[in-house]
Every structure is written in C-alpha cells, then in structure tokens.
Image (cartoon, rainbow, N blue to C red; front, side, top):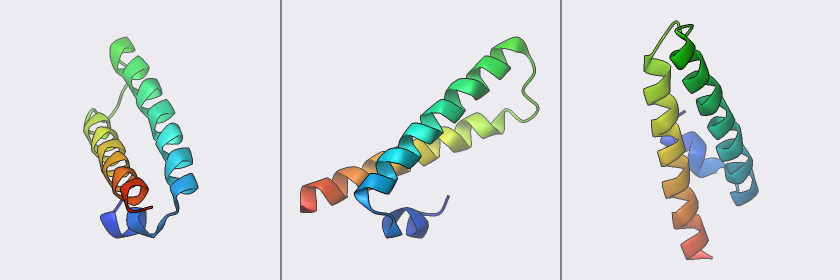
Length: 64
C-alpha cells in the first residue's frame, strides 16, 4: 500500500483498513508458527502497512 493511497482515505476508512490488516497479520502469524507460510516477507510488509496507517491516522486526528 502506497502512502498516497493511505493519505487519500478518510478517518473511518483508515480505522477499518487497520482492523483488516491486524486480522491479516494475526492469520499470517498463525500460519508462520505452523510452518505453512509460503512467503515470510508478507509479515514485514503487513507490519509496515499497519505502522503507515497508524502514523497517517494520528496526523489526521491531530489536524481535526
């Protein structure tokens, strides 16, 4: 997910996307612990996306 895409989202969209990514991260961690994860780099990308969302969400909430 690109930063421009995240900045174009509204606050509610950011909250829902964040929850969705948290669920994805949980499922990927379960797969990783069971040894079924095909691409372990997905964990890193999801974590970075969550951090990016939270940062921009904080910026938007502070502006309002």
